[in-house]
Structure formats: structure tokens, C-alpha cells
Amino acid sequence: MSSSYHPQSDGKTERFNSMLEEYLRHFVGANQQEWVRLLDIAQFCFNSQKSSSSNKSPFEIVTGQQPLTPHTVASQHGDRSKGANEFIKEWRQNAEIARAYLEKTSHRMKKWADQNRQPREFKANDMVMVKINPEQWRFLRGRDKRLVRKYEGPLKIVKRIGRAAYKLETPDWMTCHPVFHVSYLKPYHPDQEDPRRNKNRRANFRTRIMPSTSED
Image (cartoon, rainbow, N blue to C red; front, side):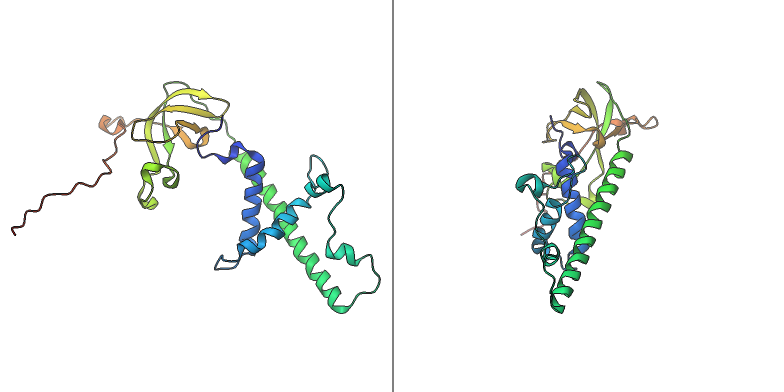
């Protein structure tokens, strides 16, 4: 069972998306308009990379051989023009740069994941705070995310779901899936000096129109 808004549940998809984003960030221009044209090259580089588990690339698994590239085709012929040599040299450089960025991103993502896999456990009836992302919460859409508080709560934990998710007791106005990954939760520490602040309160979002006091 997957938790709300947590792509890490699918490791392969998360890893591929991160590598693709990293590649596009390095090669896209300032106006970010030409990123679509880079997808074919990114897909080709990814499909020609050998997996550490199978020692074969996706292309090789499907077709039984590695893809032919300009420099491999040209190496089979002895005579090449100056223009062909320059093209092959540039193509090799671009391919090596792309491959280096993909490998660097893969190592960085593994290191980041290992650092963020710190054990954090809760039990039923524990009170927690939930991290808020305005773009993912229906009742907060259309509001300036810079003005939305980072966490919502306190909310009570109902039960644990799987290895790293928890079902929460959510109020009626919180129209969302009640299961959250543990990375979105943090322990709630009540305010001992002002108990009134320990309640989960949220102002009504509906706009109230005040009657006019001016005389016509």
C-alpha cells in the first residue's frame, strides 16, 4: 500500500526521474523551452547504460546487442573526412558528459537516500505533525504556498501501515488520503505554558461578505 505523495515507494521510478531531472538541468537553456528536444538523447543514454545487477543495458536486453552509435559505426571504416572526425569527437564528448552526470546523480541519490533512512517509529494514539505541501492538498490549492504553515496538526495516529507509513485520524476539512509516509511526520510536543495552542485549529476558508454601512 502506497502512502500519500511519496514517490520513494517506487524506487526505480524515483531513481529514473531524478536522473532525468539532473540531466535536463545541466543541458537545458535559461529559458527552459528546449527541454523536450533533449528527451530523446536522455532516453538513449539511459537505455544504453549497463545495469549493475544484470550487467546489461535495457537496449541489450530487448534487442540482444548494444546500439550502434556514430563513433562505433565510423570505427569500422578506415577513411574518414575531417568533418566526420570532428563530429565523432564532439559526439563522444557529449556522450561522456551525459554518462558522467548520470553516474554522479546515481551516487548522490544513493547517498541521500541512505542519510534519510533514519529509523523513526510511532505507535497508536501518538500525536504527530504532518508536513504540508500546498500543491498536493486540495483545500490549500490556489493559495500562496509561501504563506502556508509547514506542518498541520496535531493529529492522532490510528495504526501503522506496512513498514514506513501510518494512518492518521484526520478532521473532515482535511480532504486527503489519511495514510502518510513516515518522512512526512514528526513528533508533536505540546505547549506546556499555553494549553490552548495544543488544539488543531484552522480558520474557515470561505470569504465572508460584510454588509455595507454606507448610505445610498
